[in-house]
Image (cartoon, rainbow, N blue to C red; front, side, top):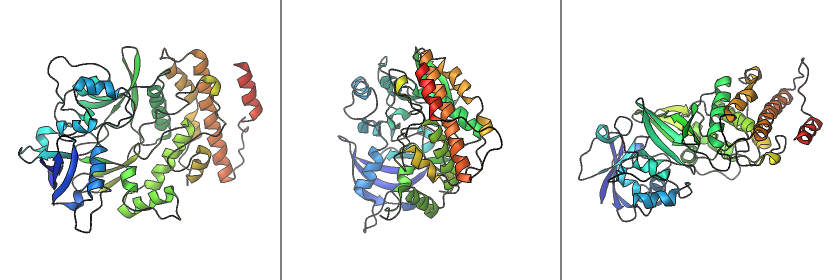
Length: 407
């Protein structure tokens, strides 16, 4: 079937999609190449690479790793998440791209999810609930990323993303809230998260920070705008691609994101959960996106006895260890450690709200967060070769050993 790839109200390309598989077979006509999704390269014949545009298209679908996806597909009577894309014309709440059937002259204003109501049937199915009556698959949940259960809802006119956690502690939503608190204290642009509940399950709630005028472009697609030379690092390559595209403030934004990830021991800052924002109509780059998606952090799936705040921790995306990745931060002048006083107590109050977090685990996690703040402060002092006038931070191994022996 023939579709027109649209960027809001702009016709970008005419494509042929095989309905049985949801696969883009070929580009019939390229109309506005400058409005193609970022990272899609052209062939010598001036057409989008078929594999690249299919990767972009299938990348909009719910990933196969999504918790509960198999059961959801049975409820929705769909064999593959890619087949859900055309059911909602590929519309998303993260950007303004969509597929308009050539035989249906829809306008963006008629169908977009920013201004129009949408069905919650898909979102409910992803949480294991069947719909009453006939299914309505017109939903932004068809184009949501990530492995945790999530769904979009409308509350008081706002588009909110609700996201669950993973057993046995269901800690990810709580971590989103404390990460928001840390960034609020430090003045870091971020997506604010609050805590809500679905029966006895904690969920994080976040208002959409993308507007009808903007696109979220993942770091992965920025990275793919050029081949990485073998002699430079992933970090250098990403900065170079941002500079080449004219994305402002990339280095400063990464400094703040990497510092927060160090504090909360973020285990999953992959290239698809940070990115950039641009104007969908003028294509002007506005800068890095607010920091979001921080739930897989703070030993979210580790037993209390395995929490070792001063041990080396795995990281993504630029280095394999946080102790190495923090070295990439170029400037800490913005970081006010006095703003973090009592942050462990705030975390304790958040954790106390969950029936899945026992007292011992809460104490361990709060201690660990406090230690991470001390470690980052120690690192910044050594980086700047500054000897503090006040009493030095107690960060000895002996202190940690004593704490562990009391548990």
